[in-house]
Length: 477
Image: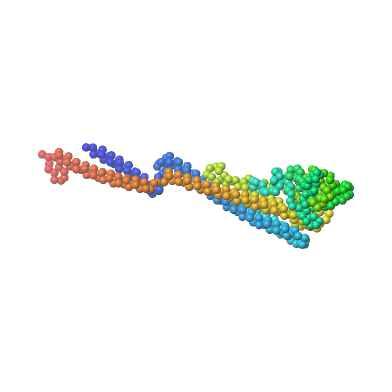
């Protein structure tokens, strides 16, 4: 009878059962089925790769939240700038009244100037975690420009003329026989790319054309030439650019013969060109065929520089990683909103001095209507630019929120995948543990019973061969 062999087999089974019992206890204590590569090498490797992605998605969500906080700071600053611009516009409208004295206009201009300084302060000081947000260094798209519709991003665009007819009514912008063939049309049409030759070759300005009178013997004020029956066309160009020389408002009147046809390719230049110094272009235009009936017609244009596409310290957009993998980034563009970027740094509502085409000061204008209209038009464009920048920031925040939602969803699903690999099935594990505990008890009981059986068999064998067991055994004869 192989008692020792049976005992060895029982002990082996008991050892295996106890190991399984220990595994189940560790799983129940930690909640993990796979806590190391020893438990499930391939499963452990897969779980760790999935966990890496989970961690990446969770950090991406944090990145997006931080980016949203930065955008909220920028948006708040733009909201304040919008309120400032609205106040400036109200002041400009207030200034457009002949009831204001020169002192009143000076006071209005003082407030406007102070508000412009505040716009620059907000633009330069708005920051998040040490990054200046609105100085243009993160701007990748140009600010709004009304002239951008001409396809070149700069040039002139027509606005409502600030000048009235002698009767006080709104002046027409068209003439009766613009093409000389009996068809009406605009007093002035733009020529060239947007009415100007291009960046660096023109001076941004506000320019107004008006047919001021008729004479059967019209003498040109500049040349002294008698052109015969003709009309007088006055040009008023306003700019605080230094190229205007001695005064910000140039006034020039030219005698034009009636029914002389369309005059094409005319270039209006700064008065500096007539004083021996370098010239700067103001506008390229075509003048319509004019008649005596066109007296009072007027048209105005705002000539603008190329829209800003970033500050001098531009370093490109802000990048935010919104996914777990390298390269999964979102670019954030933030505008520069200084008064220079918004093209309002030199606006004024004061009545300007005037200069003629020979750069000679001719006096003080009796009205501030030209600079005030220029200021109003430019502030309107600045308000549009800022509100569009806010819309862009809002769109970026919406996009980032979608990224965060997507990352959260992916993280939840991947976490579930990791859990299905690593986490213990508590119900099954408890059942297994109970089973192993029962088997352990049975195995222990079997070993104990085998020990009892072995003593009994030994006693029988000894008695069978005449060997007594115990203290009272009789000696062998």
